[in-house]
Length: 418
Image (tube, rainbow, N blue to C red; front, side, top):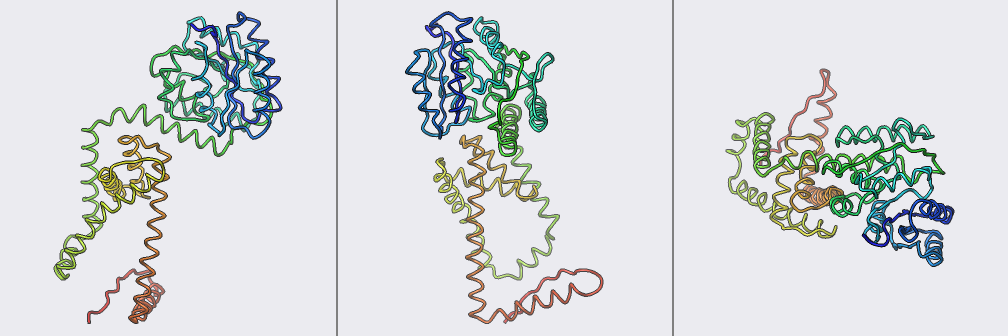
């Protein structure tokens, strides 16, 4: 065990008004139950835009029990905690919110629960019997709803996952942090869920808690963001382990079968064959070649998009991923098959879900631009060849047909052969 048995990390983002008092109270409280020289307090200053860095540097210079861990850019709450814990010297790692919303009389219980070796993780709770917490109604509703979702989908036994008052052993942090993906508000929830899944001993105890000032959590953006993280973690822990190669092959084959079945339902095979018999076989063959060539071209385009987003992959793998997602779009409504592609690139190439969905959005922009260019080219051709008159006549015929009594009739217009 190192000389510094306990490392307390205070995640600080624009805390110039409170950080100095927080450090003073923290040092006094720790000194009341820990031996001198056995603890340190680390200010995890997270890309602040106020005077917090200067204050933190001064406090660290005045007291050797205080350290300043600086980041030039915003890491997020979870990212700042990980960054500081990796550089901490203690075997017991502690953190709490810098506004001291949780009564500091609970700090000894928090630290000693883990320092004694009795538990691997300890966390305060605002929702257990015996706690005292005065929360505004809108924060109460969102917190209760969030914790219910975590218990329901992630099989957690805890009542309060987001209370900023936690301690864990160095061993637990080193084992779990590489698997925790979130870098902001969901970080500690994911840590707690994974700790329970891996059999670590977690203790939750009631605390006295009082909100201080406005929360830095955006109740729209961050709450929805944490909701998506619940789904991501549920998929990783409960669904993904069951998706073996055999399951993937079976699901893919079933997807293709359903897609073909739906094509038979929506298209009349006899009518399709009749149309092919009357078509120019040379043009049909040429269109087939163009269609086949479009797949690797789409793979190349998708590879370039992902490369610009910071992720490299194989063109043929991405072509296959596109084929799977397009097949899914034949089966699922509202292009939900695109979500299959986001999963495939995450599972096989470890491309994060936000990047996967962002790449799909970029691809849709390219599609719209391509359609616009093609439509413009066709329009120019029609104007040049005088074909606009037939288009106008067809539109007028449709309008007259739909305005007749008996409802709207949809008809197809086939240009006459010349």
